[in-house]
Amino acid sequence: MSVLRSRTLRVLVSVIAVGAACTAKSEDGDGVERKTPMAEKSQLPATDDFGDSLRTGLKPLRIVSLNPATTEILFALGAGNRLIGRTKYDLWPDSARLIPALGDGIRPNVEAVLGTKPDLVVLYASEDNRAAAGRLRAAGVSTVSLKIDSIAEFRRGVHMLGAVLGDQARARSVVDSVNRTLARVRAATAGLSKPTVFWHVWDAPLITIGAGSFMNELVEIAGGRNVYADLPAPSPAVSLEDVSKRNPDFILAGPIGAAQLAADPRWRIVAASRAGRVLTVDTLLVARPSVRLGEAALSLAKLLHPGAIR
Image (cartoon, rainbow, N blue to C red):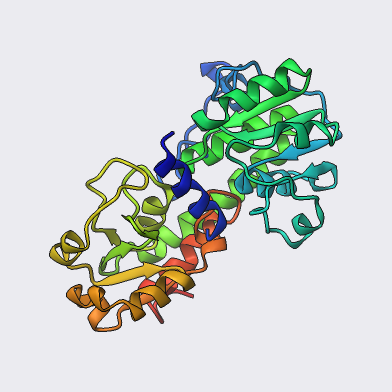
């Protein structure tokens, strides 16, 4: 991952994914194929996203999670009381703030992590973290490295962590709950107009979201259209002139970003900014591909369709 990509990830996480006879399909409203518990168990990968073997069913007692998304997932899976380390960006649920912060989740301080004597470390599967994962494993610590950048990867990540914790039933419950909320939001916005949006992520360089981000998926579920959905990257750099040319109906921005737009006269070339059509999002909610994805989609739907969504 380049320096720019690493920096973008930090922004996103601080503001800021049996046998065939037992497969059963159903629609939960967001196009997700559902399977029986036995099907899910057999289809779990044997390795994490770095290709390292998963050690399942061991029920680790001392866990360090160095990714806000996986920290939230671990709390939802009932393992919050076993967490002994997190990144400085892991702020939800409130109980996470009581866990010692060990610094950044990208290129973490391995010595500080080992000092907590963990029996499991969960990392974001960035190339910048591959060396850390290797050092932790060499020290005898089980690691799970997960790339969770999409809703599908969130679902898979929950099932993998459920297997590692020895509680796949709870993992299924978490995924089902998120699926149901996403389905309700998609159904509520299906018949509404689809305003176009530009999502402001970072200002120098100007970074937005593309088709590779779960945030693009949230916009679509919430009844909007991302003007940069044609770009495959999760967080592409764009120009202010091109934003103006694409002429979004609304601009989505976090509290800091919204203030920057209001104070910067250059943004007046974008009609939505000039007209005050800047919608402030809760970055701690919408910038995490985790257990509050449904709540995040609902919050966006209420911004894009005020009064139409309850």
